[in-house]
Every structure is written in C-alpha cells, then in structure tokens.
Image 1 (tube, rainbow, N blue to C red):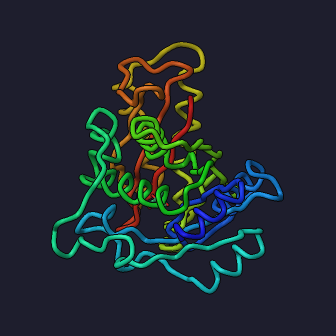
Image 2 (image 1 turned 180 degrees about the horizontal axis):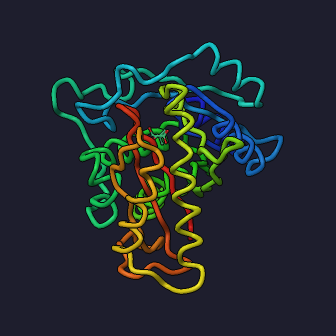
Length: 277
Ligand code: PAF
C-alpha cells in the first residue's frame, strides 16, 4: 500500500482516505462521495476496511463484529472507490503478539470523557490505527463521520499535534427515515429493539426543544432524559453528556451551541449518537 501511495505522490495524484471497519452502509458511502468531491475525478479515493482489535475492550464485540467483505467490495466498486485496502492483523500490528509495539495516545482531557471513560483504551486503539493508516496511504484528505463526534475531535487533535499534512473532513451523520443514525451495529438489533432505538434521536430532539427558550442545568436535563427514556423499556442508558464541542468538557448549564452525546445499550448492542443543540 505504501509503495503504491509513494508512486501516486510522485505522479502528483491527490489521494483521499476513508477509513472504515467494513460492513458498509449508506453512511460510509456518503463519506466516499465526500472524499471524491475533495480530490475530484482525477484524484484517487482509497477506502480501508480493518476491524481494529486494539480499539475493542476485552468484553466488547470484536469476534462478532459484522463482516461481509464480498458485499463491501461490490459497494465500494459501485461507489467509485479506486483502491480498497484490507490489511490483516499481522500487517498492521507485526509486533503486537510480543507486547513490543508502538501506540499513539491523545491525552486524557479529550480521551478520558464519554466514549473514552466508558471504553477504556478505545481511543488509544483508534489513534494508533488511524496514524498507521495515514502513514500507509499517505492521503492529503481523510474523511470521518460526525456520528463519532469525540473520535473526530481526538483525530483532529492527533493530526495537528503529530504534524500529519492531512486535511480531515468530518461529514454529517446519515439517518434512517425514523431518525436512527446509520451504524453497522444496527444489524444486531431485534425488531423490537430496532423500533425502540429511535429513542436516541428523540432524546437529542427533546433536549434541543428543552433549551430553546433559556439555558437549563445539565443535571436537570439528565434527570428529565432518564424519565423520558422509560418509554423505551429495552433501552439502558450508558451515559448522556452535555459539553462544549471545542473542548469536549462537560458544561453545567446547557444552551444553544452546547453539544449532547449519549450511548445506549439494547441488550449487548451499544449505540451512540450526538448533536449540536
Ligand atoms: O470509525 C471507525 O469505523 C473506526 O473507529 C476507524 C476510524 C475506522 C478506526 O478503526
């Protein structure tokens, strides 16, 4: 991959990378479209598919994370991806089995809250694999989804701090008709869970309404949301947070411009969503 990328660079090709863990859906394909827009018809769009083990905790769904490479290949081809990069564990982490390998870490202020607090070690895995993908594909643009809002903020920090000459584009979340954010993990939901999973979207909308007239305390909003979520009895709230989108730090009073993120379990399936309020 890197040899090819160096050849493209020498030929003056513009390259955009869309990193994914596969099991692609329309949300991923919108990232591919955004990548194409960024580099134009003569540029090259590379999609990577790699289910990165280091970003999963020991009790998480690594082994059963959905995979369907033949289908992903077809979708990539139809979406105009030029190169699909599908490395395996030995290529990405040659030293991992020995314990002697290198990781990249963005400090706790950004990675110790929300997803980072709920999934210890998760962001170390994300930043490490994305830095490696950047070094392998040598793109000038990389596209990520806003559904993983904290991930996007952490990766922007890493890209700036490690001086990667790469522009990050954060593309909007694609939603199903009823508001559920598209995610590969939606596939795990039973019909009943799927029907109740719109609670994440409704919680975001309810909070937007609640603060429209005046700021409301975060504690009050959280307790109202807990009550609101009882309409979806299969949902178990993991966390809900109100924060400053520039710093990711919690705010005491929530007002327009504050950001909200939440994670909700349906059985073992964990869904996340976020919105600017
Ligand atoms: O957002 C994802 O799918 C993953 O976290 C990423 C960025 C591909 C890294 O494994």
